[in-house]
Length: 322
Image 1 (cartoon, helix red, strand yellow):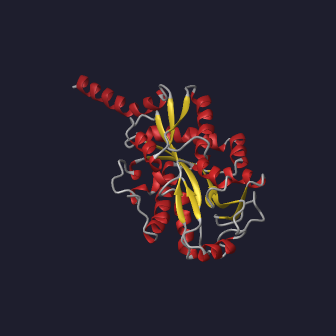
Image 2 (cartoon, helix red, strand yellow; image 1 turned 60 degrees about the vertical axis):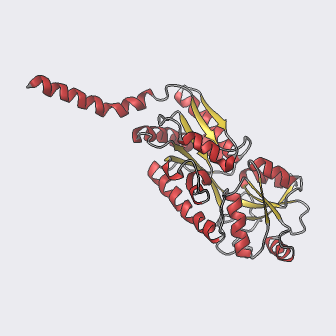
Image 3 (cartoon, helix red, strand yellow; image 1 turned 45 degrees about the vertical axis):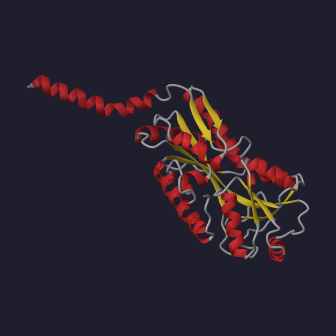
């Protein structure tokens, strides 16, 4: 009687200890942070900062792998199909984590299937225009767009990206019609705005403010709810005649489906600790990023709220990718 009972207790204890052992032995090898966009973007910059800090914390190499193309679906699908062992994670802006399922009928992965770990950071978008665009304010841009339907060219990182949806939101609210020019990442898009090949782009503060201060582009408005301390003299789009306009870019960290909760909590704890460190907080704010450091549950709710917000724009603008 005692021997079977003792054996059962040992087995039960082993099962209960398995998640803890998984946490204790993680990581066992190189950890990949997959960025589904080209190098040089804000997503890429944030991923590399996170990778460097995790390498120091974990004592194992944490590397960034850029897998661009397919409106960020190729890289996202790679992570989605990876082993749920924490060694391949996704660092991405909103689309592949929140609403690409609303745009693509044959999407090879389900954004809702990712396991949210934490929100790394968020940042308001700004309306960036080429230097020689005749319009020097949002009011003038709207007037120009109405007088020249289909003449304004706007850049984005692809169909369904935040930049694309933001421009679509502006088209609806301002009653103008523009032409969408998709790129394979934020930097190629921003480079063509700087070169004057396209007229405008909804970009993050992080990458556009240095160009603005160097006199290479104009910034007509901030797309957040409030003016930015980095651009105190630049009005919001809401102030500029588009009430209710809101567009922020955020960057989430997520794991493949079925990643154990204990492992997700372990990774969350370490990343949140990094984000809350003063030197990293200062670094993020230098990049004009607001640190996230959310729990897995709060991150899941944030993803769902963003999906609802942009889902409304997608439906009203009748945006489809196929």
